[in-house]
Length: 386
Image (cartoon, rainbow, N blue to C red):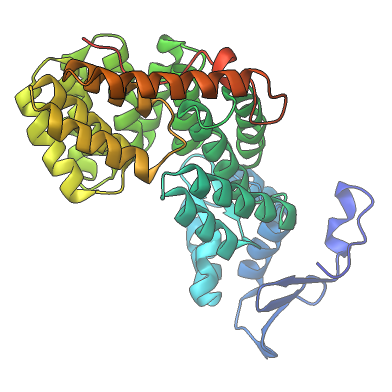
């Protein structure tokens, strides 16, 4: 924005010129230029665009649009929709910046750090600590570039919660940061299904508040039935609560939404394992590793299914591959050690035990951001033997 002559909410109309991507919008003369060429936009459509610009980053509901773009003169919701549709068409490929949520309204959301956001999610999908750290750096930069871009704060919240729930960094510290970033995202965008799912996962994994977590997941799924992540997270909650049949049912619903979502097959392996259906768990594990070979959780759950099916040598190979892919998941080492002991390889198991004790001692005496976490973490996701 080139010039803001705003001293209170009543004189926003005096703002002269606004740059939005390739567009130059003169709010005084009602002109929109793209690369020097004026767009054909009728006066009423321009007033709708002006209302969105002056409320950028916030939803303008039906009543608000009437008040600002029609000076309070009653028009139908259809008229508002058609007029905003004209604006989106005039902006061509950039019309996607105008977002509509039923019963909430319209919002002009032009990300200033779209490339950083995409890169952040690319790194996050690696499912390693290095990937999460690189994703954090991207989302932090995006938030600095555009503090009003809720996507940056949502990305930060996702990374902090993942690091906490995977015990890759101090869970208490990460969870505090998660709540802060999540709060910023909600303040900017409202309670989206994605943000509800994140909150529910935090309530489950960190706060152990199963009732509220389940409520958030169910709300998210009602609002967005295609949000597969919510189904997977709810299935994990049902497993923790011993509701295995409910977990299977919810995963079946998730499979209809997106059968190729990365953590869906891994979640089914876990459910089958805890139902003591070890043969089915192995079959699910084979599919999980085939579809998503770099998802270490799926490989780990597959290893457990192999172990409890008596195929300990194969299980050890899977544990080691999972740890090789993500050496920051330290809780994989005890699982491997237990499998070694079960296989009669006590010397190797004791060596892993000594390694774990050394890590515990080192961390308990370190007062850095990465220290003391083993002793004060109450949410390390070590799998219990059923």
